[in-house]
Image (cartoon, rainbow, N blue to C red; front, side, top):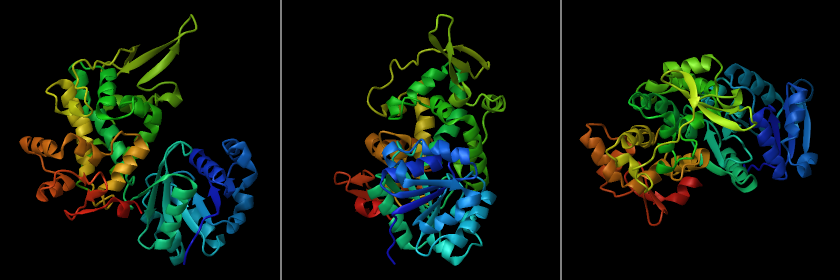
Length: 431
């Protein structure tokens, strides 16, 4: 049957639930917003545009859960705890109406774990609908079906995300951290480890951030600035989830735990911006002005922030990774390593390069997605360097080499190279 979403019930009024409710109301949908805590619901309502607040009904889980029976989409956005989610879904399944769709906004718990032992109706109607924070700003909307999810359910979510919410819909598979966070968190966690030798050899942290930013098409936060924005507490939970759920041979296993200095920062509550400081902080001086300080990871003390040194680094986008210099080696190991990691994840996390590129551009604000960047750099140069270093080609670079193809995209980006070694229409990948 054909499904449509005109009304949305969100259970969980935290940051993500509030954002989903606000976006749905802004799109003209009737919205129900529930939480265990009435004060949390009141605070979440303030995130809704004033001219859309009349569309939102609020309540608590204990007194108003039955009201979800009047809504087309029931979205769970509670804490990242499998037991809590499954208990809630069992309650929701008893009261939601026939024809409704149901989802979790989990950022990393596989849907198969949520769905295990649930009713056939639930398994047919459920998906993961993963937004990036802040929902109002970030374009990425990852859509993940389960083994038994009906096609019309995915079609309804895709239509709603695209047409009503104006999001970039990415079709992901039910693997740990899906697409965006699988690759983005590899960049961050591997970067913490791979940057350490460069710090010991005299490169400062500000220079690490400067190299891993505009020169490779990444936002100005670089490495340490991005983790400060997210928080070491969140990154530790991500690492633990990856350690448990990554495939056994995955390269990410080497980086799921923090290096010692970063672990001590975490344990001391030095988590990032939300805690007043992480790798950097702003301090107020006696004259009322502010000064920036950096937490030196080698001696674990605060010092005045220094400028990042990019003198001599290649000006053209991405060329730094081929430089014979410390900056070039850092860029090749961290950013180049992330490109190689992404190139090995087809068809594991997505069936095609298109959804991976879209996820990283929309979720992490890269100028180019991994495969677009490889095309920009010329994949043959990367392949030749991997061969020279005695490395193994990741799956999609091996496909490209075996197909004797020059790029992952051709015909002005309208066709992409598939895992089968043939070119396919980009439109088929995104629809």
